[in-house]
Length: 273
Image 1 (cartoon, one colour):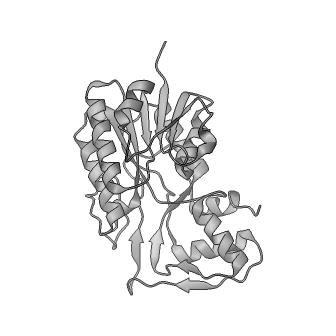
Image 2 (image 1 turned 90 degrees about the vertical axis):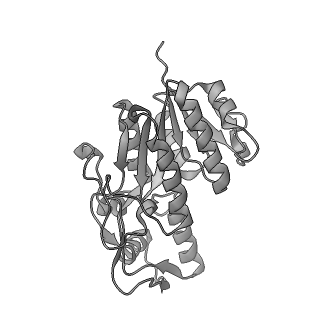
């Protein structure tokens, strides 16, 4: 019987859980959780404390064909966990799909970034992602897929939840007027990951909208979709001129039906509960 086991590391988080929901009907899908006890009785979920447990034991137990890493937590522990995953991949018949970030380019603010551009980051978060990406570059090509993801929105996303909460309590909502971004949502992101796994794809993929928008304009549009609010916007200027934080696809374009524009995210995926 062909091994189609998938192990999602960080499957109780927003993105990890969205991936789990997308894949579990099609594959023998397992996930790890740490604090969220509601997964305790789910046979497909394993408790994993990144600071205490060795990921090796979980990998040996599940023997996945695909490992999807959506881990969050202490950076030192993340690096160690990924080092152990690399060691596991050296001998196992498995692939790693790593959820990276547009932040691996956050030191380049003059242009959007493409798959083959050199990474450089000023943020600790971006540097963490680069460190793990660089480990993956040493793996045989057929064992690694780096999935760079921009800001993720969607009904249950932390970003939208925060906006809704601020609207209800009349708290200011931070916007970056001269930040140009691309965006995605959980639905489209997980469909894209599903496609990449189905097609056995490896390499570097930029999984964001194919177009760009100013952060402030996008957030204002989102708020308009959520209802008739008069939000308090707190404009944050980090530089005087426009700066980009966008990872656009160029080399590895997905099929047309899997691409998304930012307007579609605003129009179809945001509703008021």
